[in-house]
Amino acid sequence: MKKAIIVLLSVMMLFLVACNNQGTTDNENTKQTVSSIEDYFPFVENVHYKYNGVGNEYAEYETYVDYIHDGVMQLRTINPGTESVSVYAIEDGALKRVYNEGEEYYRYDYTATRGTAEILIKEPIAVGTSWTLADGSTRSITAVDATVEVPYGNLKALEVTTVGKDSTIKQYYAPGVGLIKSEFVSNEDTSATISSELASVEENVPFKQTVKFYYPDFNNDRLVYVEKQIQLKTNDDISDAFTDQLRKVPENSGLKSLMSQNTTINSIKYDADTSVVTVDFSKEFISDMNAGSSLEVMILDSVADTFGNYFQTNKVAITIEGKAYESGHMYFKEGEYMTADWQDISAYQK
Image 1 (cartoon, rainbow, N blue to C red):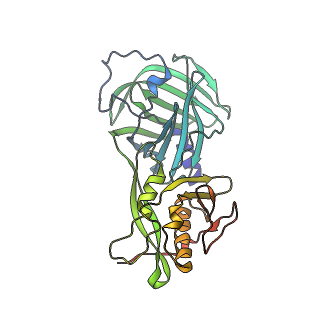
Image 2: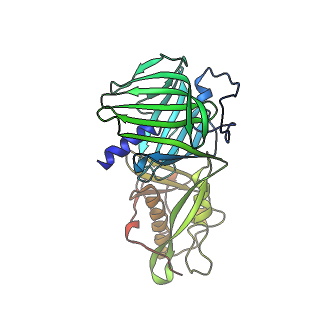
Image 3: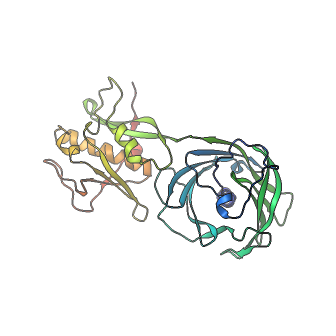
């Protein structure tokens, strides 16, 4: 039942990000010509939306903009039960959700990935514009100037209604703001209403994550992890954040850093089909390591555990300048990966 509710709410969480009208609490008297989808779906970096929920604990959620590339936007939705990402594109006179992935707790760029497309808004922006979804539901524009009151303010909005076999969903998009309200009503019990309403919009807010970084505690012949917070703005490459943290260890901890100041992470790639993470380092990862075979193994295990935990997989491949890892002590074949074992490692204690 819980999973069904989360899936249902994910349908409602097709949201829009803010633009220059952020902070406006009343747009009823604003003279504004709205003629295209872009007016209702501006692509804006580094905005953070919060929605209040009524009728279900998962109706409350917040959103961040992960990536914007070539007219495509990836949005992250976080509610009390899960995190998910959706990719949106405006093409062929329609706003489409072209990819969606649930249980997505890591940052990865899916803007080039495509799944089954779902049309959210379709031109012309006029009452009566209607289309049919893959599940047989009918979606249509039912108002272009609806007055909607939410915690964020009183706004004029586009009303899009989806009528399905078991439910009716209404979504309201305000010009220059985005999705301000979603309302789900059961067709069998109209008193069973679940709604999400825009409460606040913040500009220039990064997405913050707490990440476990694993390090060799060589003197005690073990690995430990340290929790650190990383901050990611729209289009930030996670390679930069991980490069910075893999060079550092807590002061006077006795832990060994995983790479030198001259070493960089060239790329981090995740293959969802095989669940393999491939981390490609610059050549200095080996040349500056200055470690015997025992410490080298611990460093490689720490790298594998760090990225395995982040992507929630036990398959991590380490390459150097795009080639299989090879040093004086260790050798991997092309395509070979390490087995990460981060589940049984303890936190570092000062």
